[in-house]
Length: 409
Image 1 (spheres, rainbow, N blue to C red):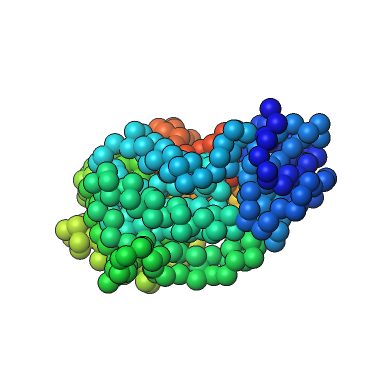
Image 2 (cartoon, rainbow, N blue to C red):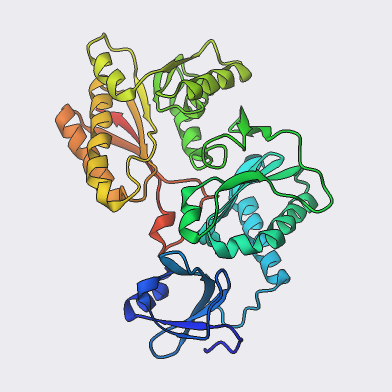
């Protein structure tokens, strides 16, 4: 079907056409072979195949290598206020359906391309929304979308008191956008007094600072993986490496761990983890330490065995394909060391949050680490990110988190 709307259009290469038909929503600048009309920066543009067939409509970006980000493949769509409201309601209803009310206090409401909002992330932290905009098209629409979303949530009983923009991301510059952060002005409302709120996840309470916390304030994608760790933790002595705000450590403690050591190289993160342990009445169980994990694990090998459950939740060791091989060296080092430390019958939770560390490659690394450590791994679970970060098939970038639970045998 051909679209009959008065948007400019671009024609793309057969390679780009095939990628779109497989489900990928991006068109790169070098994939455009012709243009009909002059697309506006951040404006809507139809995309056509080499035979003129309609493939979709998306936002045009004159500065980015990603020249068009598709947001619809329906030639009959009209991109008016009701269209955007339907999409926002659809995203929120999806979270309500797949997560249930007990997990909505802190969740991701919009996950960019996976929700067909290219370049937009919205996280809900109890009564605050933390928003990051990484595409010029979404930047142009923010004054329409954000008040609509607040209204939808409030109508559903969610006590939203403010929206904070976390646009302090270097990726914005690739779209010709400036960096910055601050309160989004909701019509007729004064900004909140504080960007700090308290959330509850898996029964654990955390203070979240949407202005100064990493990314949008708190990592929500491991919600159910933390719960899986808690189920195995009862009576165990746990080492939580790269603890950040202490979330895995606190879930393990709440799950009945006898003792938990939470380690991070950042002193500020350790202080936050310690405060979270006190907030939850777990300070007698959780010991928070500032240390470099790459130095700590070899040092522990020289001591009598202490831990029978080790958690490895490192930051992304690679953010490009070029550095993926080097990153695997780092992943193997910490996993090898953890496997050496654990007694037979001990448990290992290990993960990677980089989509460039593909699942097959990550699994091969774990097999190699186990061989070198002289152990065998009995897989308990292989998991991914929580369902409020949905994986859109055909868009590999949305499939990024690998999480394994093993018993060392």
